[in-house]
Image (cartoon, rainbow, N blue to C red; front, side, top):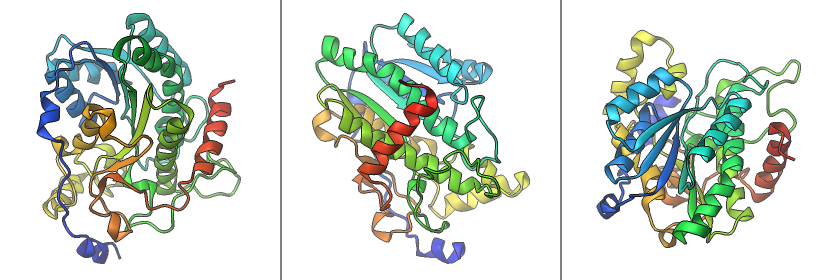
Length: 333
């Protein structure tokens, strides 16, 4: 079934930023990128630093972050440790950042895990929902006052929250059914319920989409805008848990990239950069910006900046309910 679906998936054109956006001078702007030590996060940092932004790499592994800093080789790049699977670490990161910086122009919630074996965060949440959504949800909550203050006191333009979601927030050609938020068991704790790595991943990515949607409804768009994105099927180590055998990893990836389904890192960063760099009037608040991808819905496969997510479960009602449940889970009163 997957093979036949691949044959049906025609190679669309890669969405790329207007080159004029890369000419913008970002001197003075402060941007946080989570999961910035590799993949799309690192490529995003690389471009922003070229444009003179001050970039904070928010990473769990200090050694890997230091390697990334050496690679980036910029005085405008720094590192603050952040483990999204530990809410104490999230709160510590926010406190350290606010102490060190008086502004925040953009928060890029880039980090993520995909289809990993069942595990829990330090707070007992299912790992993918806990780190992909709840950790980022709390981080955004703690930093939103500074994002808004930056808009009001310094820039007189909207600050931005850019959240990496995925085409997995909808049905793909290798999955069955539309992803949903399992409100009765978001953390897969029901006795007798079999854990599905892919279903859990899709739930977390739908949560990312709904998070951006609800931010756009709760805050003044002249002060804060939010977007969710599908960066594309990018050649990173995110999909390492999907490969049946490590020895076949490069063979599988090379084949997929040869078929035109997987894109290189610089293309994978384009959608994030489009949302970060574009003027507010050229963006749709709360919208989903998608590189081409293996959406089950053929009309959505070319992607779109923006694109209507083809999932009937991606509703404003679900977004509001998820927000309230997330507040309870992370301890926001």
